[in-house]
Image (tube, rainbow, N blue to C red; front, top):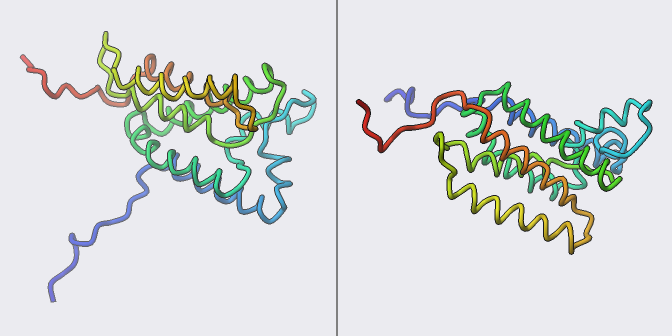
Length: 202
């Protein structure tokens, strides 16, 4: 009988930060389901609150792990699993963690300081990843057309929603996350140089 070694592909933990993040979000949502949403409201939501309350500070970051339901969770995790591994490969795990932290703070602080409203969910991370992924192959002195189109479509849609639609969605948080992704994409170098395919080397 022929050996199957080398034929059956090996499953690898290819994006530890992204996969760990998704796993934590699933566990948080499972606990939230069991507690009727109380755990998410207490520990995984960013609310305007007293500065002496530790949960106020915790929520500034922990809100990215909480979601209002399984549909909300699955929608966000689909984008994160699609885009996150490519970004983690490009920037490295530690840099991606820093990017996600910056996005979490931008999303929560913009809602609390400007709207005096709470926020829950990883949608800000999703928009960070969308904008960041559109500029990861950028060369010096160039602005990718894909970035212009993505920014126009996604950010424009969110600006419209923030002004004209009042459905409980944190459009401002989405915009803040997208801005973080755009800024990081332009100022932070990737782990490896951008591809030079199509250019002659002397």
